[in-house]
Length: 376
Image (tube, rainbow, N blue to C red):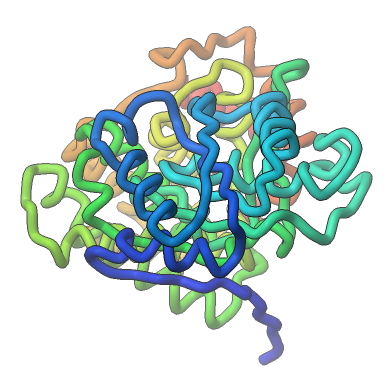
């Protein structure tokens, strides 16, 4: 047995840990660019609270609140310009996965010249960024636990990750109390995203013992807790479990990567700006049906962890879970049409080739086009 593992992440996990944001941030800078969205952290009062906590520790702050779901390369570039103008020396991402990904990208762009798309596609390499502090307010993407930042290029619809240790957070503050204000629809979407991260990393061809161990735990935690939290259970341990599963999902994909469901979803949301978790919900059962033969043992483990019995009922078990969180959907209801399939198929091979190759069954162009068609 041979494998390598490296993930230099500093996690601060637990109830009330957001109170430490000022002290933690002060270790890395004196003026923070707070990256957030346009409404939720303001409505809940979290943004003002964080600004006050920073100020109490002598840290100035500037707010960049233009990030939207499926963040754009141009938005990250705009944020980086603001950080430069204001002479910010660190970046604090406050929000969900899109916020954190954009915060990572902003911190990277400040320290690396040129077109961000060159770095995303590996034509150029960057080795540094401004120090990053991440505070997730959802339990789904796991961006607080890895060196990935997914961006969409509005010029051509390419949705692909900026990757590297340079954008791993100096500190991630994971306080599940911050997740409790999520609308149920958001909880369902992000919770399923966390599950997909763990499932895809587990069946990935480049998985290894440590990622398998963490993936199985993440799948178990989502399987035991997502539905009951969605149905209104306010148990603190259940919320902690979902937050931890999300972070584990982010950590495992950093090493084992994602597989075909994410690989096929990125072209769909890059083209039509659909909600990521809903795109995964449309694609994952369909892909799973035709993939279980590639690794029956692992798909059996997945099925049992989410209340199925074997690889044979894994896809249907996923569908039953989606029914319980009101997330059963298809691509056509999200604006995808048959005429989009050729572009999405070609784009999948452009932006997601690693995910295609990681998957336990290797699908060619015709196979991927057929899966898109089934998911309509």
